[in-house]
Amino acid sequence: GNVLKVSSIKEKIITAYNNNIKTIYLPKENKDDLEDVPLFIRDDLKIIFINNFDEVINKLFKTKTSKK
Image (cartoon, rainbow, N blue to C red):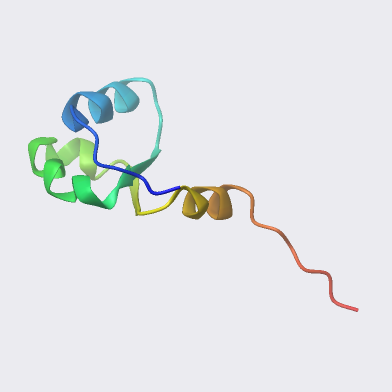
């Protein structure tokens, strides 16, 4: 399904950072909210913007195709 914009992005990202989470998936609609997050935190994280939940599934569970 489609991923919608969420609130309190700054607080969520800082909490993830403080808990040593290095990769964060965010709705593309929240891209402008990153301006509120301190630069030293943004620089230490891998932030991936998504539109659809399938994008997360495909990134997390990459399937390998077998070559015959």
